[in-house]
Image (tube, rainbow, N blue to C red; front, side, top):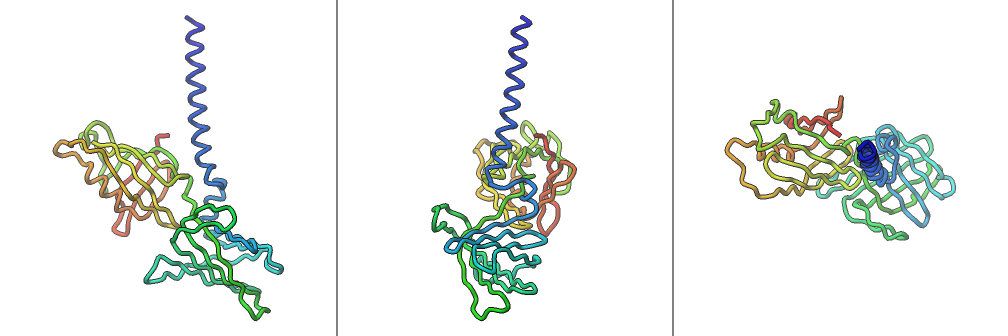
Amino acid sequence: MKNILSILLLLVVLSGCKTTAGKESNIKSSGISTEEDLQYYFKATGNEPFWAIKMGREKIVFTSLIQGKEEIIFTSTEPIKAMDANVKMYKLSNERTTAAISIQQVECQNSMSGAISPYSVKVEIKNNTELETQKLSGCGAYFTDYRLHDIWVLEELNGYKVFAADFQKEFPRIEINAAENRFSGYGGCNAISGQIFYEKDLLRFTKVIATLMACPAGNKEGEFTKALQNTTSYSIENNRLTLSNPSGKLLVFRKVD
């Protein structure tokens, strides 16, 4: 009997280790460390000649194999947004270099690897001593905040604390996979799932679908999913995830995993 209990305990421990390892693997699959994930929110690369950009809240770093432009650091600035398309342009300069970076939300294929990225990036850059501007093109992507990668259980809805009586069986919850930009969970009556769209200072829950179980009167699942879809921003503090939009706070979740 004692041997059987020991084996069962070992299986539980191994199962827990596997779950944790799987979670860490998913985070790392985004290709960047968690520290860099917070320092830089967007990366882009191009070929012929090779170049790369890392965009952060404090600085923008351009590196390349171009002579005289091996590494150039700019102070971060707010983008200029186009009125007729999802395009952002950054005008940058320092004591020796001027650059313009445009980021357009359109599918882009790497000319060498064939990898597909969600953004097309164009760079115009020149040293102040040069007459001609060098024009470069490539592909890029935003990196979703790794801290979102967890299971979150609802505590507040539209400014009010929620109770078990507000839902069918248990409190709504969402499990966010930051590496794959998707989520799944329970809405308070039905299973839900969808995708997340992430850019700097922007978070949206999109393509939300749910099973079709009939919900009893008074169930607040509809109110919950509407608030989720109206989200545009977030904050994380003290193991709490707060989702908001310009009108105010919508949802507060507690981290449980």
